Length: 81
Picture (cartoon, rainbow, N blue to C red):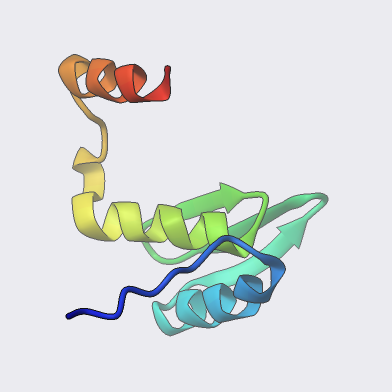
């Protein structure tokens, strides 16, 4: 049997997220209340390191094709109700 683990968003994930972003080659600065992660190809902006890491993962997996179809949006909206 698999021992399922759990992880929730919390403040103690900010530094690990920052570290991974640095390992991925991003330069990170804070401008007012917004964190900015930048590499040669992308500039990412978010309110937290965790959100920045989510954006970095999205473009790592999807690249310029990160947008979804109308059907995929509808499917998501049904889940959100």
